[in-house]
Picture 1 (tube, rainbow, N blue to C red):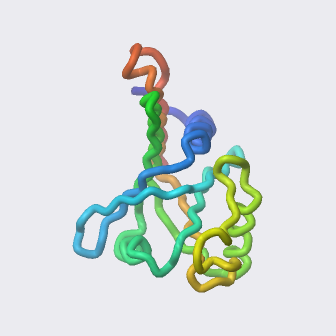
Picture 2 (picture 1 turned 90 degrees about the vertical axis):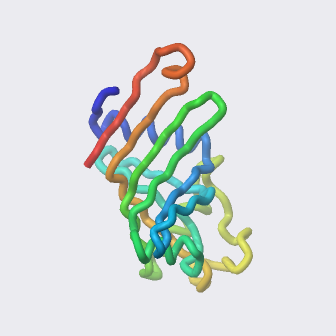
Length: 161
């Protein structure tokens, strides 16, 4: 395994994440129990910073977990055995302008990660009480190509803040 720079790892991570789309997201609930669910983040790499975004409800069990422990782990996997993982700090974007920007990020996002948030019941607009934007700030990334398992070839990229 090799340690890599963010400039090497982030674009590879985004490529895998946006190809796979759906990720298993793990949190820890207030009693210390691990909890997982499937979510649909969008990632933005600007050449310096990688930021993830999840459109989700602020009244969900996930929100209660994050109020207790704001760190989470996200893993993408596909049948070719490609894996991409991000361990992140998370922050709820409560400012109305940031919520609207989050809504627009998903509404105008590239296929297949973009979608119209209003298809979710209760999310009529970015001002809907049931709608929230969770910002993800990665602290560790790992991109593991399935070829490493299948043929022993490829490069594992890892980065830590």
